[in-house]
Amino acid sequence: MDGIEIFVNGQAQDCSRTSPHTRLLDWLRAEGLTGAKEGCAEGECGACAVLVARPDGPEGSRWTSLNSCLPPALAFDGQEIVTAEGLGTAAGPCSGEDLHPVQREMADRGGSQCGYCTPGFICSMAAEYYRPDRRPGQGRKETGSREVGEQHATDHECGPNGFDLHALSGNLCRCTGYRPIRDAAYALGNPLDADPLLDRQNRPAPPVKHTRTGGGAQFLRPETLGEALEVMQESPEAKLVAGATDLGVEVNLRHSRPPLLLAIDRLEELRTLSFDDGRVEIGAALTLSEVERGLDGRLPLLAQLFPQFASRLIRNAATLGGNLSTGSPIGDSAPALLAMDATVVLCSLDGEREVPLSEYYTGYRQSVRKPHELLRAVRIPLPLAESTAFYKISKRRFDDISSVSAAIALQVADGVVNSARIGLGGVAATPIRAFATEESLTGQPWTADTVATAAGVMAGEGTPIDDMRASALYRQAMLRQALLKFHAEKATALEAAK
Image 1: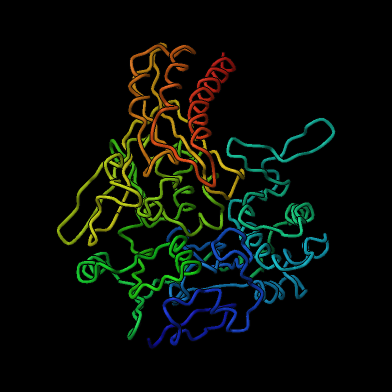
Image 2: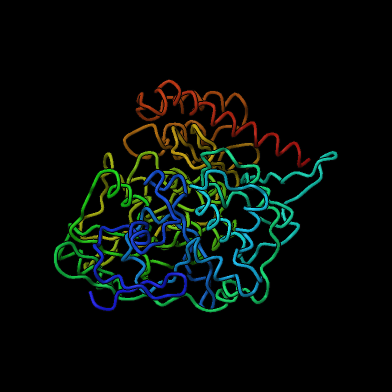
């Protein structure tokens, strides 16, 4: 337990007496930093957001906003955190005032009402304020006499200063004060050259520390993949910790107290991203935001998925491997990866094996992965299908759980469907491939009649049920509509290209 400390607002704070189950939020508040609040305890409201210095290439770092209500405090051993309280003191010397520019704009434009959510909004806004590729003039267009945010295919809306409003999608205002908050975001200029937080991004993020606690419940951050696999071999009950976006909910709402937490999020062997001959390999411990930046739109189906996956706060922590390992039938990534014919790489002390994702799940939240195995990477074969789309039906447009989802990947040549792969979520105990629909499409002319027939087949895929999110009949109707919509969109795009 010796030597465990977290750097908060520039000061080292001892964390040696902290329980592995103590959340970062609770630890910060116990240290007197009460700006971050608990709202939902499951990562949906953003009242608890803080900034963390994360790697951005080998020589730089990036201020990243995270929900502090989910991850254990010990996961930040040796890391740098800035809270809403620390923003003002960090930027004060360069701005000539005690308030950070984000705080000043929120105050001047009435962005704070009851104030409960304000510190979280400010931290998320500050992360976007310091985003390295934010540029004035991004994403704006004139419509009549009114200037509006340009709506991209990913539904991002950017202000005249390049501020992506979607960066705040994980922050909820209970006083419905969104307009002044947006006004504050769009009024921000660029950081001054003398801003210490801006300058911090020019240096590497803090190195990863090998953390081990003793007695009672334990927290362990291994140095290598081999060490992690040894622990899993000896202690198959170990709970893996990456983004903790699922574990945090288990701890907060279901009072789970695993005896051993094994942190794998910073293992370099799990953080690869490569394009090789015939495939793309994505490391299981890369966060979704890191994958999004690394792919830079080169996998269009995933590019459509990312903005609809929870919120930026969640994507900054959640990992692809974690989302697949959880095995939820309504997880967002599995349908898209199924449509891309992805495989998963499982590793253990015995070696590696590659399993098609369509054969990975065996039942509700169950898979072929053995207790001593670790999901190391996801592999996607190349070339990609030319026509793709991801549809997520949920009660809210963003930051919500799907009622049903469908990912479609078709290869059409000379008016005939050469291949079809369709992944579905929310219609069975596991994510599934729509094999019957794929068969009804393959080899057939890409016409409205073919699609209408296939849509009827797709409505019968899976075993949808009635629950709090949707009825079985609604899910069947949405499956049918997804394929019809896909055909209509592609026909419209083809006509527009003529």
